[in-house]
Length: 189
Image 1 (cartoon, rainbow, N blue to C red):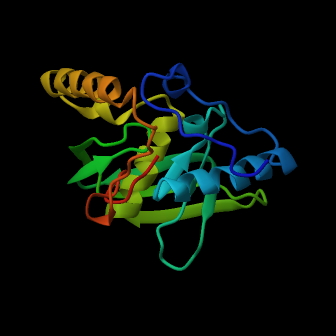
Image 2: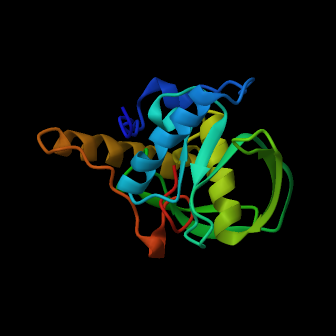
C-alpha cells in the first residue's frame, strides 16, 4: 500500500542503529523508495533516509526542487569533504526543533541509483548538508548528536516537554520551511 510509511521520531530505537548495505537493488527496494516519497513530501521535507521510516537499509531519497525530481542514493558514501558552513538545520525525526550545526561546506558523494548505476555528485551548501544529514541517519546519528553537551541536554529536555504537551494532540511531522529547511534549509530526514 503506497505511502503507508510514517516518519519515526527521536526516541525510536530504529533511528540509532546503523543501516545495512543494500545487496540487491530489486523490486522490493524500488517499492520502498516509492513508498518513502509520499512520507517525505507530506512532511515538506527535502530528504528522507530509510531508517526514518523503519527500514534498515542504506539508502535515502531527496528532492532539492531543482527540476530533477526525486532521486535516490543507495549505499552512499562521502569520499571527500572541504570547508565549513554553519546553518540552521532541522530534521523530520525531530520536528519543531532546529539548531545551528557546523558541517563541511562541500562534499563528494558516491553511491548507486535504483538501476544499479554508479552515481558521483559534487555538492556544496544545501545539497552537501542534505547528503551529510541523510548519511548520519544511515549511521544511527541524529541532529542532536552534533550539539555540545549542555546544548544537547537542553534540547533533549525541550524535546521531552514538547512530546508530553503533544501527547493529547494529533501527531505532526513538523518541518521547517525553506528559510530553515530541515537538513539544511529544507527539512531533511
